[in-house]
Image 1 (cartoon, helix red, strand yellow):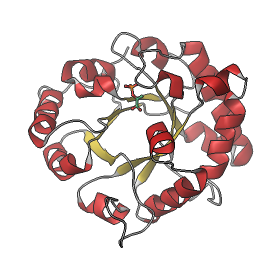
Image 2 (cartoon, protein in one colour):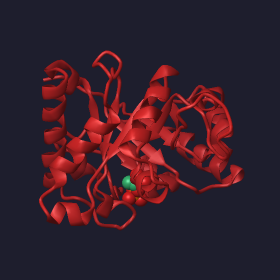
Image 3 (cartoon, rainbow, N blue to C red):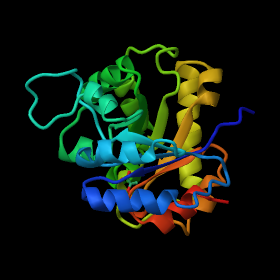
Image 4 (cartoon, protein in one colour):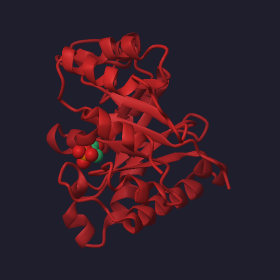
Length: 252
Ligand code: PEP
């Protein structure tokens, strides 16, 4: 079985001033401990991006944007391009977070263009998928996720998608305090891996890291990470608290 390096990623969303961002990085990096040798990523908001990237230089923490536009530059008020993201120090970008899908109307087609732009500029993509509670209750979880993967990753070869990270984030578990059970997470992660094996190759499926996101906490990370197909966590709320996020990084 392929050994996949775990990833613990923090999505700061629309939180933190510059000073708060700096304090959080200080709290994370002081006597940094990483028992599992996890890849650690933080996704600050754009205003803190360059500062956080600067502070993370020489540490084991990588920096992501929470989204990226599909054009390199132009008249797209408020958007940030992959060129700007890289220039500010990002190596990764989240694409397709459920808040982007539901609040900002990012469709599969838009997300597909964003993935293309990120790949074109060498940003590693953390592609988020997940079902709503209604979809879960209607037994549509796997078909919804498959549709999101089909739409968002349409047209790319396995070679182009090399290094892709997928985050399974059930919408009903994001920011709600409700976490999927480890079994629910494992079931969907295994289905995603099976989908990747069918669509691309077994080697690609085995190498692709699939993160779970949705109310991951210091108190539940261990059981979630114990699942065979869970390769990491995308953490919202608790990534804003240094001690909590440090404990998540050092899951058992
Ligand atoms: C997220 O923002 O991707 C997320 C999973 O948030 P939370 O951990 O707060 O549920």
